[in-house]
Length: 84
Image 1 (tube, rainbow, N blue to C red):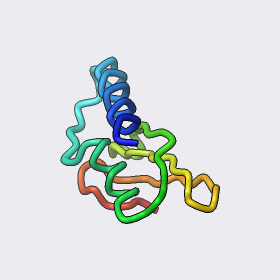
Image 2 (cartoon, rainbow, N blue to C red; image 1 turned 90 degrees about the vertical axis):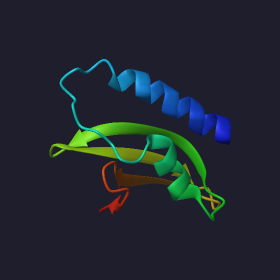
Image 3 (tube, rainbow, N blue to C red; image 1 turned 45 degrees about the horizontal axis):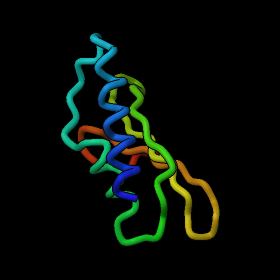
């Protein structure tokens, strides 16, 4: 589980470096955002990516819940807060 989160974080860090115009700085990492979602639960992170929505860097975390459902969580990269 931890290796999956680390691998996803590394891939996304390198993919974001390809876009020089993206000068937004995150105060929490993608890895921290994924840990925040699964902390205290039995959810499994299936994937994670960074997107810019309305000029804000947002982490999209894809999670498999214990009952087999897939949920997506959006986390504000600057504040670490869940976005609706």
